[in-house]
Image 1 (cartoon, rainbow, N blue to C red):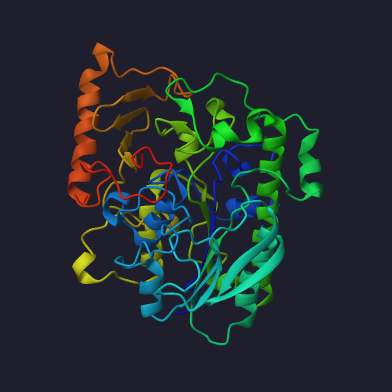
Image 2 (image 1 turned 90 degrees about the vertical axis):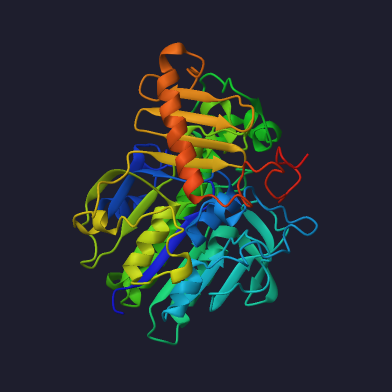
Amino acid sequence: MPGKNIVVIFNDDHGQWALPAYGNRDLHTPTLNYLANTGVVMENAFTPTPVCSPARACFLTGRLASQHGLHDYIANAEDFGTRRWLENEVTLPEMLQRDGYEVALSGKWHLGNDVIPHPGFDHWFALNGDYPITAKGTYQYSLNGEIKSLSGFKSQIITDQAVGFLHNRKTDRPFFLFVGHTATHSPWSDHPERLVQHYRHRDLLDFQTGSAYPFGRQNLESAELMSRTEAREGLVQYYAAVSSLDEAVGRLLDELDALGLIDETLIVYTSDHGLCCGHHGIWGKGNGTMPLNMVEESIRIPMIFHHPGEALFSGQRRPEFVDHLDLFQTLMAFAGTKAPAEISDTYPGKSFLPLLTNELLPAPWRQVQFGEYGPVRMVRTPRYKLVKRYPDGPDELFDLRDDPQEVINLAAEPEHQSRIAQLSDQLTAFFEKHADPKKSGIRPDGPEKTNFTSPWSA
């Protein structure tokens, strides 16, 4: 299958706002700028769930959290991190491997049992268990089930292994390489000083000093880390992390080029979910506040496609609402892979490959985006966002055109009740169609525990 290689760079905690391709002029990311300028940028890309493990599960399975049942991040303590959370799901790697792909992981898995290679992978290099979350240090990795201890900057170690996979391939099979980077995850410190120094003394346009989010208390990272008292240093470290990832992506592109594979490979850059770095006074994602939030910076993600061959109609910026569920379907369509017949009708996402190749869509694209985080569900149109918390609220309605900072809750206003009813009906219909009642985030006994900090884990 010439031209069907796929590289997915799946970053951790990279907010859409933190790239020049999405308007941030402060960041130095020449490689990602190149991908965006010569590829396709999805301007309105979202995560289905704004926290690590469920978002990854949504992409890899093509199914909602209320279908695969994983609703929060997996803690490595006790038995949470040893269980295989996707063992009853059919994943994209499994389907690609079935159809002849050589499949590799390098970096973060975070879906249970990092040691033993999961079904669908021919090559496995995963961060293992209770690894330090710092950017630099000594870490344990599983290399095809063998535990290794390696020291250095995590981004460089992950890239070394991804480049090694490309360089050492022994077959002509098409490949799927999933690169799970972590640099932009907290604690936002210890990144290469040469990169930090680039930002430390600059006036940063996106440095946030506005009002705090008025609909919850600060939680987890947003309540505990030094970023609250040393916000500027936290931001420059975050920017340095983005620049280090840009260098990592550049190394991958150079290796593909050197091996003569660049014209035969689709490259996707995205992240599991967004992140607030002082936006709304929050340092974190959906669980950066309690109650859990669905603010734009938490749910918006970068999504950039690049294929130097003739597969993409490049130089586009697409406005359609898309998410990881659609990305799953798009990569399936690109590879010519089909899901097993017994589950083919269960997927909420749709392929947007025609948008990338300048073909006609079979039907008009949706004008609405859905999301969830445990008992919190969201429906968003181009202008309005409704956030419902089950079973008893509090609920929120925001006018994103007139109130982009999401500080004015319109949910109790009489003039918006018909709109709320309409959006609520759309939300209910979507989840009634797709959710599994036994795995739903709003089932009476609550989602299954994956850690001890979720609001339903008390």
